[in-house]
Length: 412
View (cartoon, rainbow, N blue to C red):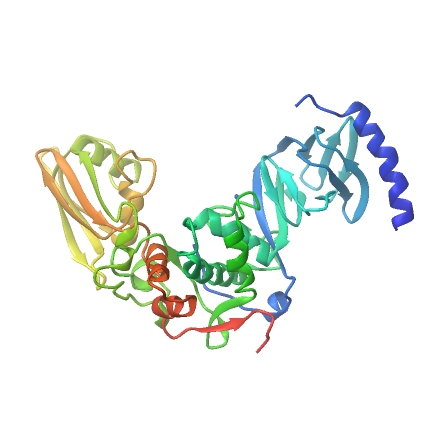
């Protein structure tokens, strides 16, 4: 293979170099299967893009192009690659050379094992496949390198080592979640955004991240000899939430709400306390855009908390209003509130449902604590515990009581 590959690279590379140079990314129950994870070098497939029928990008670092499993060329930096799908196969055009295949691979042609794609560095390789009429770009990467790319996108790193045990705890959470998503019957395993875990490739990996991953390599949370169902959020606001209150259908015993210290561990979080203020018109507009109100002129009369769950979060929100003189009440369930209202600038969902609310002088004022759904690991709470000298085992035991640490390459 090596003898036939090298001359072909040399011939095609010269063509590219002459004519082609340019001037120039919560959550389901775990589904453990040792067939997929009983391997220290296990790979996970991250979907980077699948929204367009055509993708054009510039090669940022030299790569080896594979047509399915056969290497056919080295594409040097500066060349423009054009990809399109015809529904059954991928068309690739580079330097006026046209190829068609079921899929293509881009693998590193450097000593550091990195492929650059759209200003991001990725370990492993890039796979290009059809997604119906669209082009799908997938990063196939080792599980451990995937975790390295998740940590800086999901966790504050701190300035020294005081966050280190929290980073190790989070690495285990992230790895546990990733294992639950590996499914070889699908074309990819995880999205690169909040539909799964935010993944930033290898661009922002620091030494402390490498240490956190290396020192927890292959470790996951387990329950009854299966990977645990893992959730996490930025800041629980002082009390984590019961999973069944946020994600109906889940009721794992290790995902019941716990008090996050007194005073709360996560009170060190930026914006631990927050306030959102809306005019009546803005508030009603949010309800309309969320589908809770139809067309017409409504008058907001009051907003009340109907009930709270055991963690103090709003279980249902009652909106009293009138239309054409007729009074009505809208009941928004707790797990729908954040997306129904959104935050003040309407750019993101409401930070949490741990809040007080009042209607006063044509304004709705919400004063709350925390950020996120609140189930499972509280990220800022874990950081606080790390700063207090607790290790990753103690942190995970606190937020996931009853779970046991296990190894993915140790079938049981």
